[in-house]
Amino acid sequence: MGLVIAAKFWREITIGVLAIFLIIALAVLNHKSGLLKEAEQKCIAQIQKIERAQVEALAKQQDKVNKVSADYEKLRSEQRTKVETVTRTVQKIVERPIYLNRCIDDDGLQQINSLIETRNSS
Image (cartoon, rainbow, N blue to C red):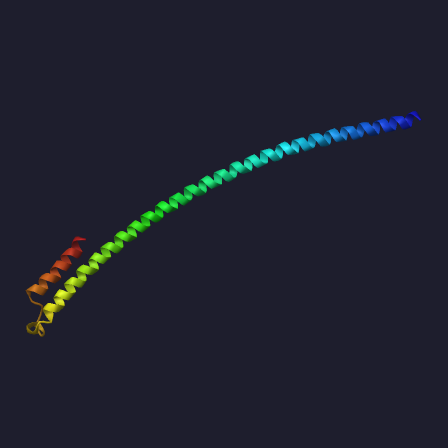
């Protein structure tokens, strides 16, 4: 009989010890998962900061590209206007009845030379 009581006593002690270990393990697990969540949030915040910086850098570069493109188109438009004006003037001079079978006169030569000078100066 004393042996049966001792066995029940040890069984209850073992269950108690295992329950305490289980509670300690759950507490440690809860603490570690809290730390893990905190570290994950810090990582996400850092990633978002880097992404924002990259987006801002990309926007700045895109603005520079757009400005250069706009400047190029403006210059191209101005050049096209100059060429068109000189072409029309030269065409008018060449279409004069006097010069149909001859070379370009002084007015036409002056227009062509002005176009060449503006192209060389650019």
